[in-house]
Amino acid sequence: MKAKEREEGMEERKWGQITSAEEMDAFLDKKIRENRVHNFSFQLTDKEGKAQKGCRVQVIHQDHDFTFGVCPNGHISMTNKLACGEGKEAESYWERIGGLFNAATLWWGWRVLEPQRGKHTFLEEVDGFGPMERMVSRAEELGLKLTAHAILYPRQDVSPQWLSSCTKQDAIKALEDHIRITAERYGNRISCWHPVNEAYEQIQQVGGLCVEEGLVYRLLGDLLPNAVLVDNGGYTIDPDFYEKGIKSAEKFGARVDALGIRGYFELYNANALAFYQSIWEHFSNLKDRYQRAVRFTEIGASSAPRKGSYSPWDVDKTTAKQLGIADFSEYRDNQSITEETQAQFLVRMYKLAFAHPDVQECTYWDLCDSYTWNHVEGGLLRGDLSPKPAYWKLKELLHEQWHTQTEIQSDETGTCRFEGFDGTYKVKIGENVYPLHFSKEDAQHTLCL
Image (cartoon, rainbow, N blue to C red; front, top):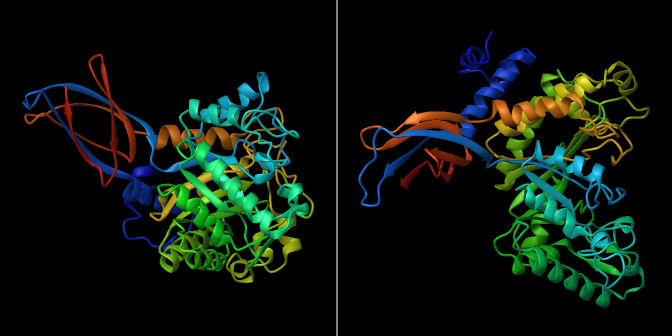
């Protein structure tokens, strides 16, 4: 059955009525067309406003409004040789990034930016970190949208060691300087920020620094009023995480614009319908509860089994029951985790995120096997930087299936109409090229030739 025929068969289908992976794929494809594809038009005129009929026009989709991101420098354990380095490996690494993604989340932790007090890594390498400007410039050259992760990561091992010798007052002053210097230098280049990452405790204690997370939101928000501020770090199964951050921000008169979810899957069943349904419902529940956009800011999936592999369903008994998991030892032993299952699972997860109307982003973490948070084979690239099947499958999805390219002719009123994905377009008329943006809210334009 062809994809469009499967979509039509999903017209009134709900999650509870889906009985196969093929039906789920068709359901998600239909939701993608409903939520990401719209009818657009633009009228061609001359300088006097006269309609230009009969013009042959080529419309080519350049980029999605949706954020399909990647973190180029993984975690703090990753060296600079790929993200900030030079040479053949770094060039190959960034070529792979540009060939798939439209955004980059930069690992922007305080220890990385200022490993020694007063010595920043913006333009030079310090203690193995930087120069960060080289990474930012590479991302900009590829036209990637930029996110900074994270101004404060309240954990001792990823914070500057010199904080331990600061008094509380001195540490807060250092934090204020850190935020100001970073915002002044990159505020016009980085549009999205994770002010605090994984803030699980009420008061954050890092060395001599003791501060509520809402202060960071306020300090950054005051300096960057147009930036998107994301409360990042809630796991895919944790709806309560964001309550604390939002209330703390409100206490300091600050704002939280979006909710950032992280999900690393060492164990999964790529065909488990109940799992995908639980994630879909989680997206919906977050939007309903907090009235904020949802961003899947960190996603990863393993391509090989690992002894003692972690699964979020170890701790979430409700979802485990929905998935039919009673014995986790048995579940681990029976799961086939390969490069092929990784590709199948990630295609469905990306479809799920892109299909949901409240989700704005899906960002892959740990692009390369050499640098993964839990020492798993969770990259889209192997250690030698060769792409796995998941890389090619996602590239086909993002750049071929979710792509608009058409040729049309303006009608009697000089109008060209087409159906396409929300995003930026290149309109070619003869030898001339015009950039236009189309979305549900920005669906009509006038183009003066």
